[in-house]
Image 1: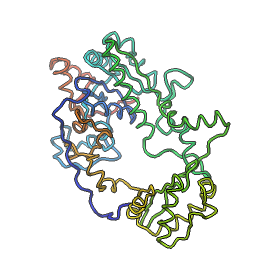
Image 2: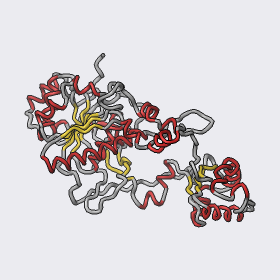
Image 3: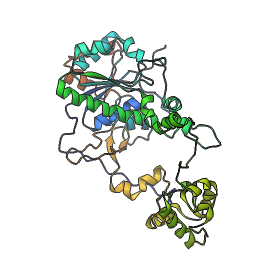
Image 4: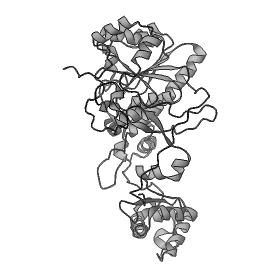
Length: 443
């Protein structure tokens, strides 16, 4: 971890907005997604320049979020009482930067009518409900296509729209488990583990964004819209294909190996000097191993390159537990970053293990502006990761911070749909829309 735990990370640079149009400029996306995977897909489309309108219910954000960022602005400017913690939820703001917020109750037929008006002037609709939900709203493909034949209608069901599990609702950990990814994650002497963070959701979001861009490209040629279905579990199957092949051809169930590799050794994460400090080391071949032995010898660790236990790659792999024990005793005497730099200079693939604070202090991270800030009315400068790719002619930095609750109601109702104030007042009075967070109605 960082050798300077008390050092405050520097303020990240502000996102610079490009002068050129973004790749998806002129594309409008209706965002009906929830949780994490769906918002990630539409967030990427928004960074690419699409006008993403996120549909939220009048009670769609918790009044007392579990985690909020400290406000650096006058709460009175937030437009909803003395305080608005629902505008300062870190996860929401991360997943929904560069989007708009429209408040709409689709349980009311008048809310459905507004949505269909919006579909008529949009290019894409993305939802990640269980397959039955859009039918419950009477918003299935046939209905949407009638209003807009060029629409790209995207669904992200957990298990797909056909098969015995079509109606099963699941979050990422459940899909990780069903896909085989959890079975493969963990140590040989322990049970399966959930992969870190929202791995399933990130993977599905990226697959979905690629599918949307592909469908829009097809529409350019044909003039016709289509449905796009991304079964989240099938997105994860791409990650375990080698295990499926292993079972098919050998009949063996792949074993959990922790940080080990199926043929390389050493290959792992080892303790370093300091509090919760670690270093990753890999030897791919005899040359890497000889280079590592040279570094060990400099510190008086006598491991000759021709040691019978470690003479060949296969022998090293068979004796990997003894090799790991030897390395732990050595790495634990060294500060991780300095040792990683030393090993890299000596030709050994190695990296110090970094936490979030380390990333914000990392010179490479800072030099590439891997994360930037965007101004947020309720938080102040809000850090946002940049897309992992860089387009030289059409840059795609975060366009703006996540929207405040109901921030874009007026734009959608009046500017985009041309509703007059009397009609919008009727929607407010009926509870179809709101400009202030409402209590969730009893179920």
